[in-house]
Image 1 (cartoon, rainbow, N blue to C red):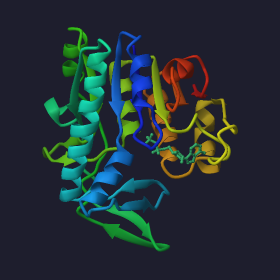
Image 2 (image 1 turned 120 degrees about the vertical axis):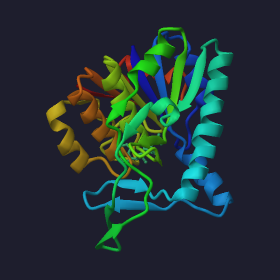
Image 3 (image 1 turned 180 degrees about the vertical axis):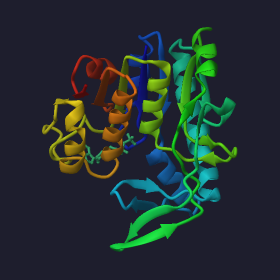
Image 4 (image 1 turned 90 degrees about the horizontal axis):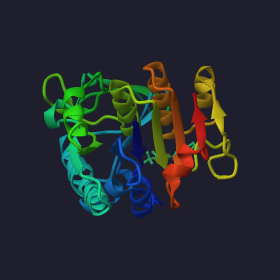
Length: 264
Ligand code: ADP
């Protein structure tokens, strides 16, 4: 049993990924959709706004209108695209968001402390949060009856408001809750790179205690969240987190066989 997160950045080959994934039996798929969201939101006249927290992590600012577009792209286009491809490959996939059956639940952030133009600022009205609870009962109901969950943010707050949550950390929480042995995070880069512009500068192995140092030294932007997710997964009992690329065929199998960055 493993949890796999497929990213949403430009360059991912979803057909090849699904063909490979369909060879496996017991898994939960979590997906992103950031590239598609950027394109569609821009077409709708609402280009994404990114904010940087005081601790240096980047995330999307999500007001109500952004959340609605987010749902169209993640829960609609991306989720159903993956479910359709999986069905075609013989996997009985069921696509759900974190609000369905309260699969992913947690507190909404009250106010964000951000850095804007070098100055600290408090930002309110952001519909985002973190996951504290996973509805394992519902996921097992599906898994035990031969269905494969295909999951995506948003999650739901304790006040039943849809909240945007990070996809990688989502996958980590699901892996922890299900007691998965492995978490695989696939994106458009082959793993953690010493130099993000040089795909040959792959870091092949990181120990749990080195994660913070690697976040500081090598990871920029969204890659920081992947390492944070890896840390949360390991701390929750997952044995191994694998970061790998999904631009080529058999990317999942290659990553499971050690082609990317192994964190344990
Ligand atoms: P996804 O949408 O697939 O979850 P992201 O685009 O959010 O993936 O994160 C992957 C991106 O992180 C890469 O495309 C790359 O530009 C960026 N990145 C920043 N630092 C690094 C690094 N040290 N190694 C690899 N990628 C990095």
